[in-house]
Length: 253
Ligand code: 13P
Image (cartoon, rainbow, N blue to C red; front, side, top):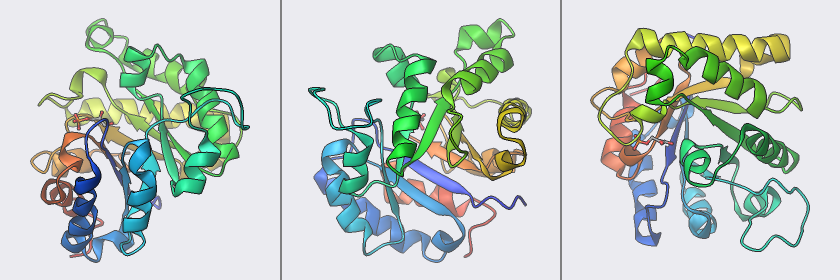
C-alpha cells in the first residue's frame, strides 16, 4: 500500500442544506476509527462552511470549499469569495476546476491554476480536478487531454495539493471506467506530476471521482494508484458515504 494517506472527499455541490450538516456527525459515528487512517473531507456550499467547521470540531471530519477566487488579496470582486476568507471560515481544502465549473462557468486551465495558486497562498490544499469528456475518450484522446490539463492547471509553487481524476462522462450517472482505464489515467497523472515535481510528486494524492458508490467503491479502491475518491451524490447521506469509506482497505474496523 502506498505511503500516502488516503483522502475520501465529499463534494456536496449545490445540495446539502443546514439541516444536512447533521449527516456529518452521523458519518463520524458510522466510520469510527477508520478516520484515523483515512482523511475524510466534506465540502459543502460556501454559506455552510462555518457551520460545518463548527460541527466538525466534535468529529474528525475535515471541511473544504468547492471553489475560490483566483484573486489572492482582498479586492473589489463582487460575488467572489477569496481563499483566505474560506480558510478563516474553517476550510482546509478547496476544490478547483471541477468539470461543472469548467462547463457552466467557462473556466480555463489557466484560471484553474490561478485559483489553485490563490488557495495555496492562503494555506488551503487545492483539489485540482481534471478529466476527459466522452467525445475525447471515444477519439482516443483521454490520456493526452488529462496530461495537458494537469500540466496547465497545476501550479508550480509547491506540491501540497491533490489531483482528482473525474471523467466528465462518469459524473452524475451510473457508469464508471474499468479498473484498467482508471489505472491508465492515474499513471499518466502521476508521470506528469513527477516530471514537474520530481520526488516530491510522490506525496501528491490522486483521487478518482465520478459515480463512486458503496457498490463500486471496493473496485475503485482496488485500482493501482488511486489514493482515494471525490464523491458527489453518495456523500450526502452518512450511510452511503460511510459505505464508501469503510470499503477502503485502510479502514480500521
Ligand atoms: P457523482 O459522485 O454524483 O457522480 O459526482 C462526482 C463528482 O462530480 C464529485 O466531484
